[in-house]
Image 1 (cartoon, one colour):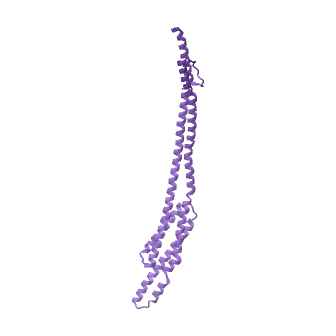
Image 2 (tube, helix red, strand yellow; image 1 turned 90 degrees about the vertical axis):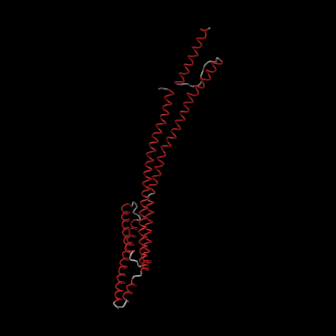
Image 3 (cartoon, rainbow, N blue to C red; image 1 turned 135 degrees about the vertical axis):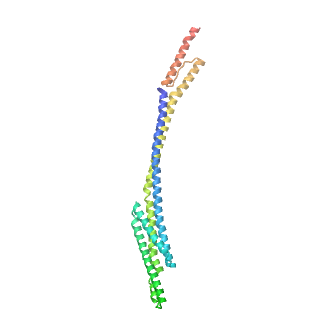
Length: 280
């Protein structure tokens, strides 16, 4: 294999090999981008889920406190204890998985403060219920009920909620929201890295495209200069020779197989000239 055929084959093989390697590199980078994207989405979903669990536990705890104060329903004591346990479990998970520790200390302090107030509320509620029961027994026994009224007035649930618990609850929910914002902000560098990886995935394709355009332009010039123009020139010169008897001459540069074709046409013309006198 030589000449024009070799050059054309090498050009097309170069394009194929370039496309193959560019595709491999792009596929590898795209898989990395896909893996990083999936990891970022999982981390974001996990952080949002933890924040939602903490907000739900705090909301249930707040609702139970309000119902206990307003309606004096002891059934909500179980809800309060469950909310405290759920908040503690969620905080433990957050401590293990948290990447950013900036708002974690504030969140822990706020949660512990709410838990302390809730436990204090349960203790006071239990004391009040015990005092009410003992007061009723004293009434039934004919004793004065002033002691019972004084015990009931010792703990003002509405005032305690407004001055202590609501402020601690607002601080806790604010700490949870700050934690949620901080965890989402911590994903920004990873998102920027993902952006760079996306550019890295596209870059080989762009480079390959530019190289392929250069190869195609070079191939076009080569085919036009060393194949198309010489063949057209030979066709015109051979036509002039056959019609008008003009000499077979080619001004275009010829190489390789085209040069061999020109030499053979010259040989045929010379042979035809030699055979004409013999026929006469």
